[in-house]
Length: 98
Image (tube, rainbow, N blue to C red; front, side, top):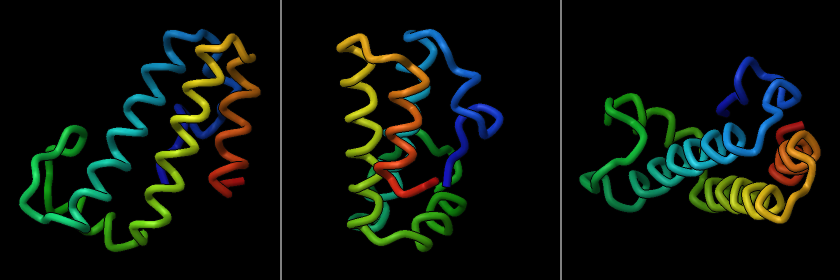
């Protein structure tokens, strides 16, 4: 799984940084889901298709969609002024990563 900065969501405190991080996380998981469905599709996050393909093999499409949804929910919460740390912790909990 992707880590948040140094593995501690408490280190990301401002909304702009959190939003950028969540966009990257979403793009990474999106790429993995796309590879599973269409191995030749364009990638947004990964430059190394082989590396991404190996990582994609570790997840089901359903799990990747859960992770994307958790990142989207966290992003929405931050846009609605939820505490950044709380939004990121909720994302990790919702995604069953902690």
